[in-house]
Length: 435
Image (cartoon, rainbow, N blue to C red):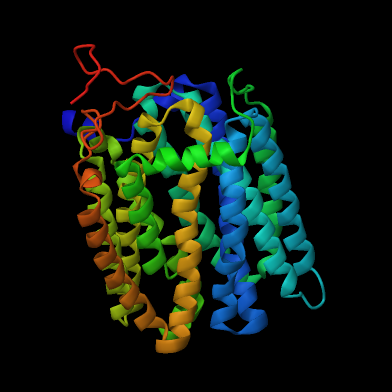
């Protein structure tokens, strides 16, 4: 029984925090619909264009709005009521989902609106996500952050399993318009729950959104080699080994178009296994090392998915990759939320958004371009091997990232990690760790 308690998921944040329950529930509902659309949009682009590059270009369209709005959204998150920011952006995302539905209802759906809507969605998501991420430390105590992050991952992975699998089935049987319609309905429910959140006003001395504030956040990130490691390792892993854009073509090449939804969903099966047994994460303190090892496993698993010609082995490899990515995400998020002061939390969330979003967008472009040059499967396995090499080089270049230990201060730069209140984190004896 003691062993089971160590591994089972910790539900304490859901039991003790009303705002965390509302935030978690709204995300669970809207995420399900979003994953339906996640499958529907590239599939619709493939059906209209029949082009590898046209599907891969979805990532390129998202890139600039995500970078610009992600950084500015981080500055806004430190200067405005985060609840209002999240709610307003959620309404805008719902409207964009409605536009996808309207385009799909045309007698001949157009290609160009898909790119416009995808770009606008990336912009709004960039504005919303820093405020959404920065809300978390304000809804639960510091000692419940890892549990709250695990619950967020659990929510994500249930949606990522059910959403794409159902999305693939819906798109293949009754068409993408039904996926878009369900997405619109889920946004309505999520907006209602977000409306019930308590206000989260900024501090009275909060900086106004400005280029100077953004630069301050970037400089802070640059002063923390441990944070740089989390950003760069994840970006490298996603850039080289994120082949989702070519899944529609991989499914056809393997003679298994029925498996498309499973390809999108199965990585979350591995991630779900990790989150359901996430109690063990509280016993791990070398967070940077775990991020690096997990990124390496992700790359090896993606290489295996590209090498094998058996669809079932592909699905197993993708599940392993998903579990590794989940471990990486848990420890990256814990490092961020436990060590970044609240006055910078929004701006750092903007940088974090870029680290885990820009990589996948560029990865889609890389996967589509390489598939055009060398074929679908070689583009996948070569990217997986490149990921492993890149992670190794980054670990060698950033030893402080690999040495990071949550039980200590920052031995690399000789400064204490501030908690959410901006005060130094104290060790067990009540003294700030200055080692």
